Length: 150
Ligand code: CA2
Image (cartoon, rainbow, N blue to C red):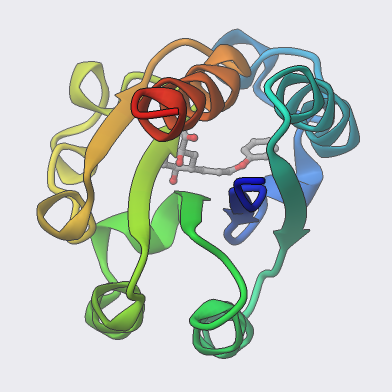
């Protein structure tokens, strides 16, 4: 029997505050709502999933190191660190599995400083601008890719 594919969903700084401010950009859902939707999407595709959020860059980097021999995929919304953190990008580049970058908003339709991502070049793909569906679309991509040869 084929082993279950394991996905780690990571969330960066301030995403724990979702649902409290700027609903015009980020919607009304909380991070707990997003986690529930991710868990249900993963379950429907028989994928194992873990979900985390941290405000500290070092915690995110430690989590990626720890994920190296535990997970097959990382789906990450690195939030503001997307645009600034060489260290986070370096940690993701060390991850032997595949990375998908996700964003709730369409970063390319926003301020110029959000157009540049340090993570895109080391990612298999990017999903941005679809609200919470950016996360579930990324999970669906993992399901399609990993089940393709099954
Ligand atoms: O659209 C996304 O998912 C972002 O990664 C969100 C980041 C932003 O810096 C990126 O450019 C795009 C910001 C997350 C801030 O989270 C908030 C939570 C509650 C209220 C307002 C913002």
